[in-house]
Length: 516
Ligand SMILES: Cc1ncc(COP(=O)(O)O)c(C=O)c1O
Image (cartoon, helix red, strand yellow):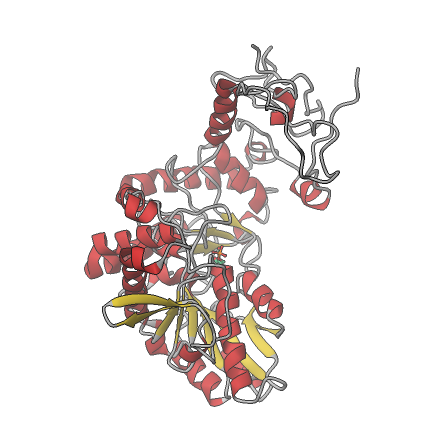
């Protein structure tokens, strides 16, 4: 059977040009239609006997007509999803320099551990006496996180970084309410360079967000920050290292000023991977911080889930941590599930007590590295980013000058100014060279930002090839070869998509073509 969809979705003038072959395939790069185009409602992958006559109990809610789901045979189904999966670029395919995302190698040992039946086959509603080992693992992971961050408590249930931010801000809100200041402390200060989830989380919890500008060196403007502190400020959300790849050197002074003003210091710990084993956020004065296990501790990125974003809390915030949390009752571990046992807890933020599979992977990563190995991973991540910075800084400009960076290096587009090539074009040309682009246009404080995070996973040979590729592209842009960039990628399964149109006018539903 031919793979070509019966109703092609691309038009000649769209960016989705076909390969020009009879099948629309290019070599072994198979063009894949939507499942609605390849499947037929009358086909089924299984043969089931007609059910015996039965009495419906749906009381008139029965479907009156088939809903038109596409049917495929088992081999067709397998091929459809395997082909789709082959279109994904992943860390298992090659270097993935997406800044602020920490696309590091996921060690296979972690996968083997997570598949052990004692972890993989348990259910959150099982009696706790039957899952004591799993609870011990959650407790052990939490202890490591508190030790590494120098904090007093940990909430394990948040499902991702942004969920962790919401959790930390809810603990802060509860602590402020307990002091009787809930009606007055309503403002949260967020640096302009912050990830968009920070202001979103604060406002979701009901705070009013006010920005703090950055200084010429990329750090938070301390004078502006202290000028904004006052009895109406609940907290500041600081990312450290920040999203420009720089360590906030004044973090201790910031913590002291924030505390003196009666507010809390929330740290976005997404970039914790740069400082593990080097410094402890709790020692710097941080009150709450989420940790993206899928970044620092190598659990897979799940495209929105399943993730884990545990939140560590200072002694001041510990009583307000969410349920459930672990408590030892003699020899037995037990989850405290209800606020009746934790009256100051802000409540519950997730149905159960976290993502077991992610916890196993993270602890496996920690245990297999040991304290020295974790410290070295951070050092290598920083070294790799600085190697890229030093190797490209003669061609590409940096918004805050040529200074050492942490785990990621930020370039801007000043160096492209006279070339007719934009950051977007440069990133798309990287696809033709077989690289996933770096993060672009974030953080917003750098014009035409290009944020590169190589992580510690890459060998020197891999970094050298990446650097040589970027140098070749940069020299082409500076040498006037704009054609290599405008309209790129030229060799990918899809040409450049109209991202603005896709965002403004998303087509989220397949509409059957009109009968011919
Ligand atoms: C600095 C920063 N903060 C917060 C987040 C949100 O984390 P998550 O994607 O796990 O929700 C990210 C994610 O990329 C981030 O880079």
